[in-house]
Image (cartoon, rainbow, N blue to C red; front, side, top):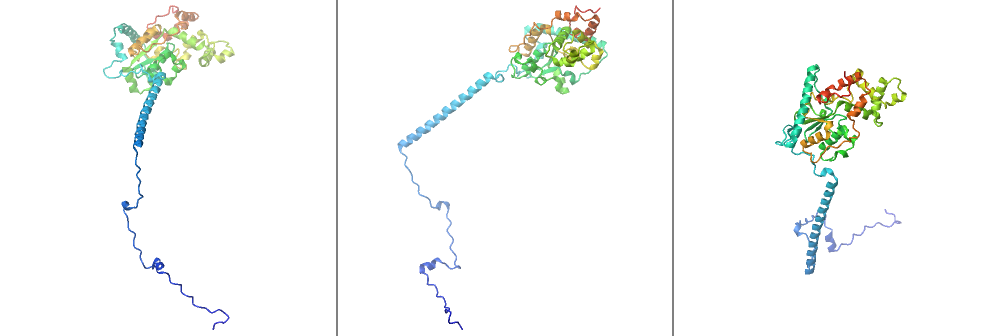
Length: 409
């Protein structure tokens, strides 16, 4: 029984019926919607395009602009090309490597062309025939001296690559130069740097002397393999420059022991010479070694103990030991006494004589035979004989007579 104090519960009235139109919006769940039609791209609705008519004046303006643009492009291209040409002109003006390189020989190694070796032995130019005969006589002199020496000596020696470090190679002109210190080797190294530099150098005297002696600036024969060495010794022109042995010896002494800037020679050789051959030497002399006397230098050279120390320094080593002329056939033997003449003759053989000349040397500072006689005047006859025996083969091979100031009897 329901409590009368509570309001009576009544069934809620149903919602009012929807209008007929709204009843269609809510479709029953079991009804399926019809699929939308698939349209092709050309059936998509597009916005209408509006064509703007081009007036005749506008057409003329557009054509003028296009013509001006074409002219501007042509002017720009012309200016750019001119600018590039100007750059190349000034580069070639200030960069020697871009100038005509007279020292690059394109035809020296081509089939049918004549190299320096052929020009030496079979000269086509009549003005070179006389010099060819002179150098043939010098070659014969070396061969005769070596034959006499080999007959009297039991020593037989085979050269190794280590013996070839003084032979400078020029691949472009097929040259091999054995440099002998104190025989214009600085200037000849400069010339070789010009010949092998492929345009990097044009004037030998603009190359600093210390740069000419940097080993990496020139390639030597000992850097090749044995087959390559043999090929070059057979096919390249090999040349050497020599000097009267005692003049060269005095020149080396003056340069290495009387000039203050050669402190490395003073320390390395001067201190040793003074310690061995000077009695009661001052402490400064023993430390600095900068006042070696020529007499002490000669004693050092002829002392058997020096030979036991190892090979002589290249500045006073014999040419025979430096360049091995009895093992290597030198095609040209130049002499210090005719330095410029012989050097320029060789440059003619190479084919660069019109563009490159051997530098002139300062005759006022060179060591002369008179100066050499003065240095040897204080040397005993016994020491003179000993030092002559040391350099005897150089005298004989290169046809230098025994100096008149020597007392050999």
